Each structure stands twice: as structure tokens, then as C-alpha cells.
Image (cartoon, rainbow, N blue to C red; front, side, top):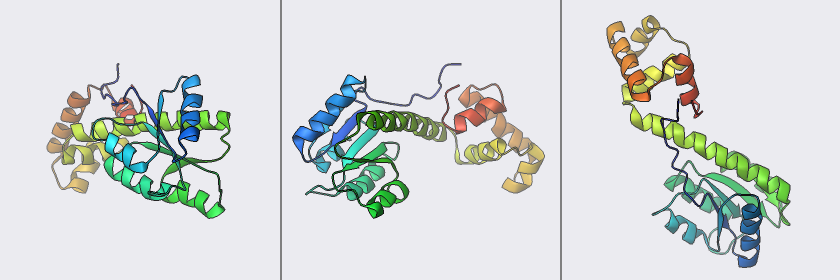
Length: 203
């Protein structure tokens, strides 16, 4: 079965944000040499403004910037597009920052300058894959009603129709109707495919 949920990944997959224009351009070129389309930005506001007309699967962002630090930028970016992956980079690595990057701001990795090209490619590749999965999950959620999302959540946890009915306060027949609607909307042929979709996997 082909993917029923377009992930919406744009032609420019990656934004590189660094107030040092030369360094940002260098990182973008490194990605380009490895087959990853990237564009360099020098200010957080430029990236956030670009989101009005395009989406990025991944943003590689410096932490120390004059206009807005990388963590504040990450919070603003997540508000506009929670399915954009984040990779942080800095010339001044601090352990506390590394913990914040991963745990608090959702960074997939924390790269020290000068950037290790191999680690950069691995981190961004993981970010692209993560973004695709997140966009598929969001597309699935948008396709279903609130009640259908509740039924799907219980289905993938292994609940039977009989168990779901009292859990949701509805009849078994209504559960069956919701299941039928979910299968019709997702064009799936069984629970295994529904589980895969709920995880953002392609089926």
C-alpha cells in the first residue's frame, strides 16, 4: 500500500541558522554535498518568517545568537511547527546546555563547532526521518474525529470492542461503527497496519 498520508516535506528540507553567515553557509554546503537540500539563515526571525510559506523537516541551529538564543528560537519554532526536527550546534559547549537541548527543547543532537561532518549528516538524517513520522501521525490525527482517535488509541493497545465500550461509555455497536470508519478513512486492512500508522510508519 502506498503512503496514505503525505508528510508534506518541502523541497528545501533543512534550514541552517547561525548569525555567522560564513559558518552557516559552510554547514549548508556540507549537507548539500551529502544530498540534503539546505538553506542558510542568519537570524531566527528569518526562519520563523519563512514558515508562513514553507516548512522545514529539520533546523540546524546555533545556540548563542544576538537576536534570540537557540533555545528561545526552538520554543518559537515548536509553536509554529512541532514536526520540525531540531539539531543544536555551539562553539561554547556547556553540559547544562546539552541537557537542556535534548530534554527540554527537543533537540535530537548537540554538535560542537567545528562541526564533525559525519555526525552532522547522521543527526540531520535522523531529524528528517523523525519529521516524516511526526507529520504522518499529525495527518492521521487530522483525518479522524476525536472519538475515532480515542478508539484507535485503544485498538493499538490491544483492547477488544467489548473492553472499549465501557472504557469510552458507548455501546459495542458504536465501537464497531467507529472501527469501520477508521479502517475506511485510513484504507488499511488490519490492526498491524493501523499500529504502524499510529507510529508514523509508512505502510
